[in-house]
Image 1: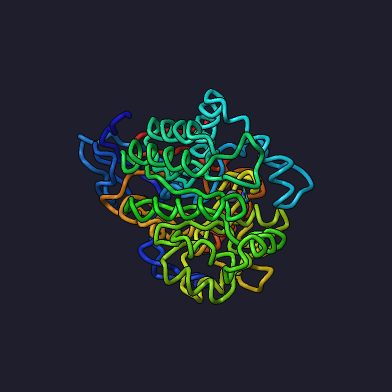
Image 2: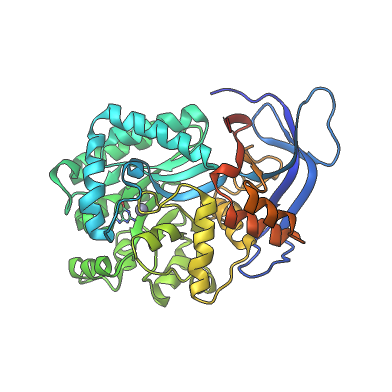
Length: 433
Ligand code: GUN
Ligand code: ZN
């Protein structure tokens, strides 16, 4: 890992000091500091933010007129599914069988997994995501490759070997005993090493036997600080299938609760078809929902009720869910999130969306001191963005009258083409050609 050179960057700084809520355009939790210097120490952490240039012992970078934000956090994304992004004509269960499982089977070859991990993480950086919660495949080597590649880039990454011991092709199934051994070895080798954390990763309740879910619960009970990631209540046919497989459970979410899988580090993707009792349970356990709007639209899964989740006090973050989702760009994810909520009559502010993609996700992951803000002491995981790229966005930007209007146009019209630079722990890891 390269160590940081003490560096000061002059730009328009934007982050959050609290939760801006869903609909308040003038929230005091928004912290905008135009034309300020952000100082990065040799330890790769933010040292200070100030209006004046620092002394001669700082390397100075003048990025006036660009927006500097904490890097985005993609809380649910599948590394091997870059190969099936934008696959036509299916909904969840046939999409898995037709496209996804065959692609994931190729990752049995460690060389394929290694190349995929490198391409995937470089792509995240080139889209402005500096931290992620990731599904590799069932193969332990695919998780190993992802951790190694993240460590080489200094990235905050949460992942785990996918668990699936039924309802999957032969070459993608594990078994309880071997899976427990593989997970334990990965945890001992990687959990808490640098910026890597392990997540117990049952793909979804349909692809794990009750015995495997119980094993997953044991791992969580025996290793404090482990994350849990899975899918829940994404698609109506899926929900009906889970009810058949687990007739004793009150709901889909209850399957996970019964196996000891819901903790404050649990990240559950989708949660479209949850009910009030489920939402109360999510809140009680401190678990979060990763809202994946582009995936939900593309696979025709349904419209997530953010307002109901927020009313129940459930943490909600934003995620691309590539390859069900159609872009790694959190701009596109936020813009799709806005449209999904608009269909329910709920107009989210740019602040609600940006917060969910930065500080909100960091806090829900219990990593608020490390990522998601420009607070001194946090890691310097940063992105520099152009306000507008292209004639239409530039024209719109030139007519904006206040900050919310400007940032809303930016997130709606922008994408990875707006990204100028990505920094991880004070080291520049992406620069636009
Ligand atoms: N449910 C189980 N596996 C998957 C997956 O790979 N993608 C999505 N979107 N949902 C799932
Ligand atoms: Zn997913």
